[in-house]
Image 1 (cartoon, rainbow, N blue to C red):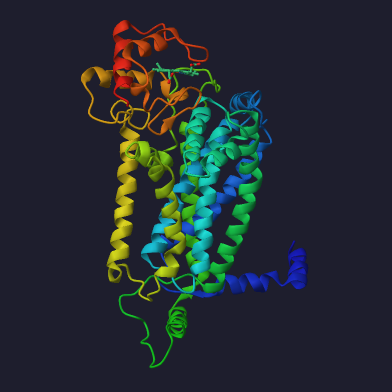
Image 2: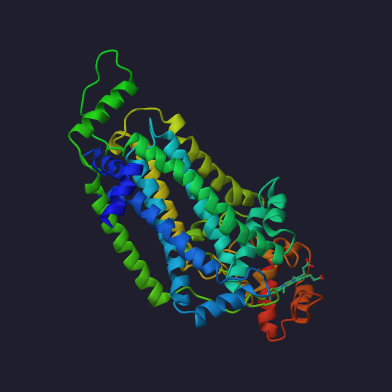
Length: 459
Ligand code: HEC
């Protein structure tokens, strides 16, 4: 064994490189907050391994997808655990990427010379969101199916490119075999390639520039007269490294965090697993879709901006947010990195965090979906209308009909149905159905009246 190692080392110089890598000095104050990045690298590797194993057991077509997942879950050794780990790791990645971005932001670590690191990081954020969105559909259960109905409808509501995006995402107008093939292809081919690409550049940049030292209120070295900000930066970073510590000391923290996270994920996966509901049924009338927790904020937001304003919530705010992130290192030129010396930036970020947390909380606690019952309405409701709104959600009307900006597009958009149909026409339609519109025979006349009253309020 020794001889083999020596032979390899002699031919490749790996030992020397590794030693130089581990011993290279990094700033002294690199601490626990700096472990998010390495934890993400670790968790993404976990996804590659578990994802590959899942793919070996998966048959991507509407006729077989659900059965193959069910089989894996029930009959393959560790199959349920495997799904659980993949799901919980996905959630952990979203959470950690948020923390990682916040840490980078508050430390001002996106500034010179790390702009490219930041840009590839934003790229990785988008890729992770893409993974969540496409992965959600693959089990092909009710939740997967209806969340994708809603999600693709949201994309379809974007101005100008919306309908095109909808067609491209679905591979047609409805969600079916083409949609599943596309989502699967994105999930296992295109997005992993993008992760490798962005991730490699990201990591290479981190190694090249060294880990950013936590910001100081007072500079470590004073600028020389006539010295450019950049030269000053490098001189200060060199000083940080001189009084720094070797990289492997930070690596020990990284390893500890990764091991703890993985243990936690194993426990969660074992305890809660990955849910698998009833198989997707495009004709079902009583399923209310809920998004994954990290989309709850967006989902909730969509209930506040409706009608003509709808594209603001579905398109403008998310797009502006991403553009803002991308542009950040370019309009924020100041050298100052300490959060207390950047009060506007710090306050803005704190506000954004509070907003996302509040929306997520409201989205999580609102009656499904995303506040139906109160918020599918455009104004204050009478008790009769409110009862109707609740029934509208419970009976699964949203699966086929859009109201405001959420819902399916199997049936007509009901946002303004009150100005189109009379109360009696509404009652008749719901009670007797018409073509693809099912008859809701189990509803009492009173309930029918309530739903009709609610729909009448939508003008
Ligand atoms: C399985 C899908 C589906 C479900 C679930 C569903 N609908 Fe429909 N609905 C349709 C279709 C399709 C039409 C169009 C029927 C036609 O005219 O051919 C329609 C038509 C309607 C119309 C007439 C709209 C118009 O502009 O003419 C109303 C009102 C309506 N549905 C209300 C409801 C309500 C209330 C519920 C829940 C209790 C519900 N629907 C559940 C598919 C559905």
